[in-house]
Image: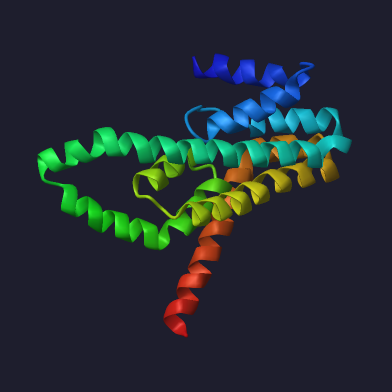
Length: 193
């Protein structure tokens, strides 16, 4: 089933309404859809490299808006469903401790999930559940999703078709190594200085 969904998404790249499909998939992926918009973004840029920056912008804006929808899902469904369940089982106080910890590091969680292959939708919903400051959430989302989609656009614009295989096979690893190095650097500075 997942393969059919992947193939269907990929076939949208050549459709005349591909830009609309890109926006819809980028929006949906940030809150509930399992397939990332990259698989539509990449072939669209390969087909029209002069539109790379436009496609990256559409992806970023739609993804951030979808992230805000995921945030709303977490915020409103948690209030009506999650809280009573936690209270019933006596975990409400433990959740408050978790909420405080998450909100202290939430901007990093949003940023890391927005750049890496980690499912961004999990963090968008969790951010709503913990009531992470919406401004912090939005800024982190714009930065992370901008870096991700504009980097993909820049690589494809610069290198064309040969970069496609690299992106599909190894970019997640490169992003992950970059984020580990970035966070490790901040942690090292915090404890060494």
